[in-house]
Length: 280
Ligand SMILES: Nc1ncnc2c1ncn2[C@@H]1O[C@H](COP(=O)(O)OP(=O)(O)O)[C@@H](O)[C@H]1O
Ligand SMILES: [Mg+2]
Image (spheres, rainbow, N blue to C red):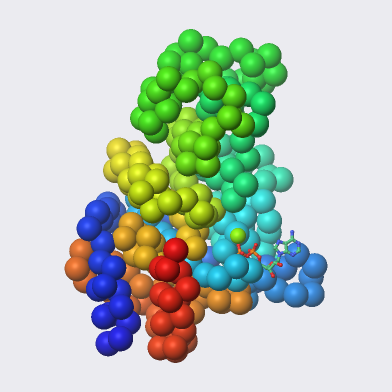
């Protein structure tokens, strides 16, 4: 009861509808370790539906970034199975690298090239499809440059195409990272805390931008958040991770909250999530 009441307090007003029911990401009892001794993820099982916005919330060090790295094939699980669009993620496998070109991964650090322009950063998203020689020479076809400019406008950076990326504000840099990911024409967007440390207005603008791209492209978004309130406002589902385990998973369907897993979380912990995360 308390859970429902708390969630109601920050009810979503801009919801995405679930488009279809096909699962794009499935994890079954996934364990992950960086040193083969300590486990950063301990038995994660989850399914993510195509076209939805899936939020992962949890305190620092709980395993959120590790989870995204596994989905992107940058890290392999010690135990358990992962399927991303019917394939096992592994960046060392040629077949999956092809898929990776359709996964827009935005790391916590954003991964932008500081000394080049906004336009050049966004064009990096087109590299996988312009061929090796052209990409070595940075020889972009005209239509790709036009596409990049269109996306730059879409993310609200029109007029800043030629600005060096290091001269931009934090919010603007996030927009560039989103534009670069959209330039990939992704089927999946993985975003690691891209709205953390932003003021509320900018954070909402960026989330609206992603929600809009999702609607247009039937894009699946898996987003790590620090802020439970924001996650509830935009996600179709929210998973809470604590010490490498999923301790809560809820679905949000209009005004309805669907409880998928709340057995392992105490009311005290729910209170803490709100108190810690929504004060900012
Ligand atoms: N490159 C790494 N090498 C060793 N341990 C790591 C590395 N990255 C993360 N960890 C450890 O894995 C755990 C989960 O980290 P992470 O997934 O980054 O958490 P979060 O993103 O929720 O803050 C932490 O204990 C962290 O110290
Ligand atoms: Mg992290």
